[in-house]
Image (cartoon, rainbow, N blue to C red; front, side, top):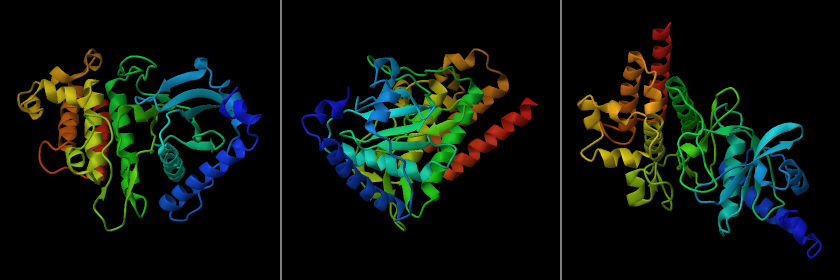
Amino acid sequence: MGWWRKKKSERPDEKQKLVQENGKVLLEKLIQYCNGQSNPIKTFSASQILRATDNFSPNNALFRSRSSSYHGYRGMLEDRLVLVKKWVAEFSSRSGKTCCDIAISSMVSGHKNFLKLLGCCLEFPYPVLVYEYAESIICRPKNGPQNLFDVKLPWNMRMKIAKEVADALTYLHTAFSKSIIHKDMIPCKIFLDEKGTAKLSEFDNSVLIPEREKFVEDIVEGTVGYLDHNYMNTGKVTENTDVYGFGAFMLTLLTAMNPSLVVKLYKDSPTKLVEDGRFVEIIDPTVLESCKEQELLQMHAFLILSLRCIGYGGEVPKMIEVAKELKRMLVQAKTKSH
């Protein structure tokens, strides 16, 4: 029926032990990240989670992570559709990372561009997270390579997603006394709700930069193509770590390819595509099918901004500057469409 149910007759205190162990780690992360502020987090029982997902039925499986360390499930809990994230990999540090995810999610759940955390369950070996329901923007299949994109995204929708994710990252960088660096800005972290609003998620790899500090050192982890080269070479995490990842994410929105493939295809420099007027070569063909001339100009500006974020074309902008520029582009696009 479920991990703890199988063990219940043999070790009747196992469930309570897990609650105590996971609760201790979660409390430590809440203190570390929330500066002692109260962020009430609702807890669900294991039986509620099992009923909601039909015992984590394959029929309710939505995706699994690239590392196969967690699975996502659709569920019905308290008469509402939810997204349930269950960690499955046996990593000694996983409980800490999961609780980091819970702590930061609890801090940002009031912002419209983050996947809203509804609660968690501490009665499994690793905490199970329960979110508002939303769909991933890409397909994360159980087997085989990752495919981009899971849903058809017209150009105006891709611009909107970029702007809303930029708002979310700006919030992480500026809203708290310690800047939060997401550190893993890849497309599968982005979801869309039923209204088409972009939601950033998954903070298990995130770190804090203390007040008056510019960086922290951390282990190098992430996805090739989205990793800031300075972070890869030095282990130093800065705000630019997210700016680079976001610029790479913009390239993916534009091309539907991993950014490293774009660079590999155009070894001299991706900026050559802009200078030579050949940037249409890398644009996702599905958005070119019904593309208007005005939209091509937007894509051109979008590409230039993404390249600035990853270090081509002058000083790397702050995330707040990127968000403002994307907002300006969207407003301009709406004005010219009327």
